[in-house]
Length: 110
Image 1 (tube, rainbow, N blue to C red):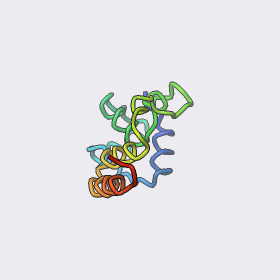
Image 2 (cartoon, rainbow, N blue to C red):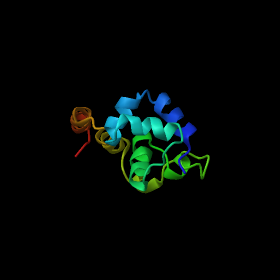
Image 3 (cartoon, rainbow, N blue to C red):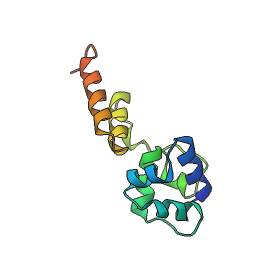
Image 4 (cartoon, rainbow, N blue to C red):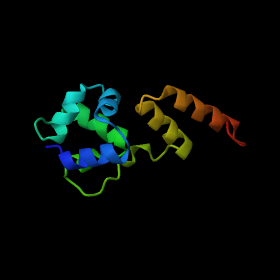
């Protein structure tokens, strides 16, 4: 079961409105309200998208751990690559493109 307080806290901390988070997660805004009110539980796919959006582990969202650290499956990515990926996951392609250009303009980048 989703930890509704953690979802609300993460949403507010990262300055998402119900509408903006719903757009990023490809959901109806009312569904976000239901999750935070503990009226509904998200599917595993939605929990995964939330974890990626907030850069936390799914276990943290589910209340299985107090450690929000996401799994290290992106540990092989540079900080620049992680920033690009995060922008794409937030549905911000222009930001991702700008980050790519900045990365290419750095000395010693290939």
